Image (cartoon, rainbow, N blue to C red; front, side, top):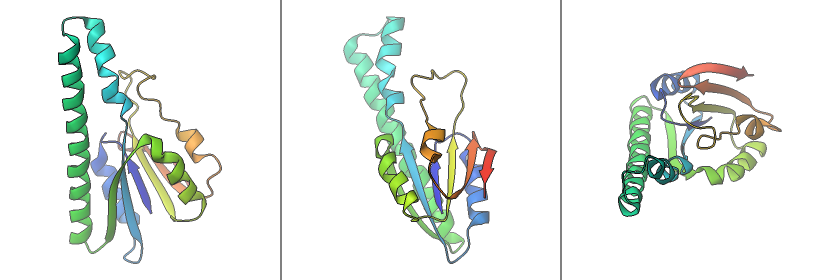
Length: 157
């Protein structure tokens, strides 16, 4: 079973993933880092116009560093929970640009089920948060669950 996630309301999705998991299966958890989000900050900040270029870049770097750190901490927490409950859990972080390789693994039958959690935040620009979930799922013959902000939205068995 493969779990891809954003950080939006993740607890419910993790709980559901463990409920679906059997002791014989392995849960692979991948934090997909959306680097466009922190990278878009300099443009947004410069439009406001009160910070200089150097400060704007520093803010971007700090946010990106914290974003990655949060991913590592979340993955450690999921791994610990899995070990505590006796499950096999493998965790990793990837950049969004690595999703085509992951899709290839899914097409080759590497995973029995796919779970995706991401946000549908109405206040984040579509240019910044450009998830192509339908494109990613196209051509996959695998059962999946799609969560938006921790709420089950779509399921295919």
